[in-house]
Image 1 (tube, rainbow, N blue to C red):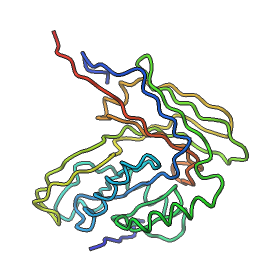
Image 2: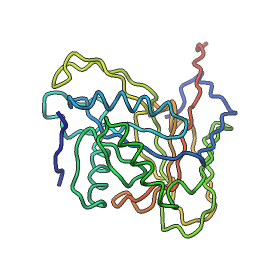
Image 3: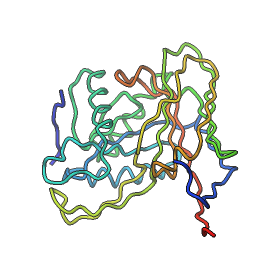
Image 4: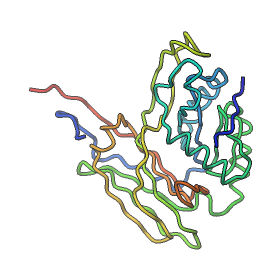
Amino acid sequence: MQRRRLLSAPLAAGLVIASCVLANAGEPRALIELFTSQGCSSCPAADKLLGELANDPSVVALSLPIDYWDYLGWKDTLASPGHSARQRAYARMRGDREVYTPQIVVNGAVHVLGSDKTAVEHAIAQTDRNAAVMSVPVLASIGGGNLNVKIAAGNDHAAAEVWLCPITRAVAVAIGRGENSGRKITYHDVVRSWSKLGDYSGSDETFTVPLAEITAKDGDAVAIMVQQGTKEKPGIILGTALLPITRQATELR
């Protein structure tokens, strides 16, 4: 059943992180955000599709578990009220009042049913007609225990914000109650938190973030996005990047 509803640390000792990882995300054609819930019987098909999209190097595909179905009998173990707020903000900006699960928002502009791969591709093509979408290269690298982010200069861009999201590449959850009771579902590229790095107005920008701030939030990868508007009034995605973080635990002595 498709659910629709209007909704008014430091690094651990012994952690070794590769210092030569580099990701140039100037080429992705889309940022895909899946609003999903462990308590929604229609969501597993969308979660599976998100996993497939996450393996496509031409897109950045993120899972944003929401919390407004928790009352149905199962509290989503990955949900964040911030994800629910982001989904509502998108609906306000579009003016269509469409807030449901599973819902995919493509490039901050177009929403489709989260399990419909064809609709996702059509939405990517539709948003690509806007020349500003994915027009700003984002370069991310790791060095000296830090994540280093470089945003290239662009022309004629409205005010935008730069956001960083630690993500977990795969989380398997055994669901004990609710509509998906008894199922074990793997969630892909799950956003664990949001941190605003700064503002972007078309000039070159650089940011440095200690890796400890990412790994402390169960992040084994990080997504960066440049988005027009504000947190409360999100607009189109100007650029994005996803960078895996290689970690190797060593024995404490």
